[in-house]
Image (cartoon, rainbow, N blue to C red; front, top):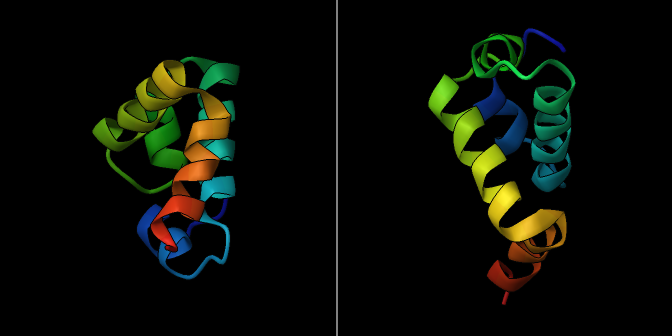
Length: 71
């Protein structure tokens, strides 16, 4: 992962859901919230939030969330 902070990646991305998806995938590779947070220059709680949301709603709902917010 680059040294660009998560918040800046999200803010400047046309597809922030893909960044979140990669972050979630990275968590499942190493199973360590703190390490993923360091790699994405964000807080451990943010990583945990998105992983838990994925577990609850699935990836399709995370991606649909963006579509619904545009209306």
